[in-house]
Image (tube, one colour):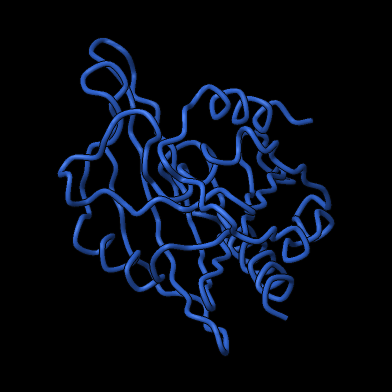
Length: 214
């Protein structure tokens, strides 16, 4: 398993969940994209214990800590029934692709409206583990019969006297009847995706939407 995927799981599994399960929500395993659809041709399913943390990461809502301003806190994505897969980038060792299918408590339009209203936030626990988050709503891929949206985030973490760590994410979303698909590319640094990586993300998103909604 690539180191970056293992490190992600280690970080997530140490988190506690704050009311993110939805009792009785259906299992979405049959709606998940195949691991062979990932750009490297492989991905690994995130263990159930780490799914709440993975979804919190995708949503931009910390499991431990808070978001400031408080009214910029994203709605939690329920973990019950959700499936998350993580695969390596075939070209960048420190980057990953993630695909998730989950039940949703709000709409994609709600997500992008909040992101547009809150372009600059602080997330985590002040002052020891806080991150400055810049969020931008970007053009969403067009798909018939589903609601779509796209968000880019730049997350800067670092305390006094230490160089900042910058992480960038691009997240594509599609939703129908309370089921949401999220596909994300996560990389170190603040640089833009290459055209090749953008095409890989789009292709994985198309496959994930087809798997979830047909």
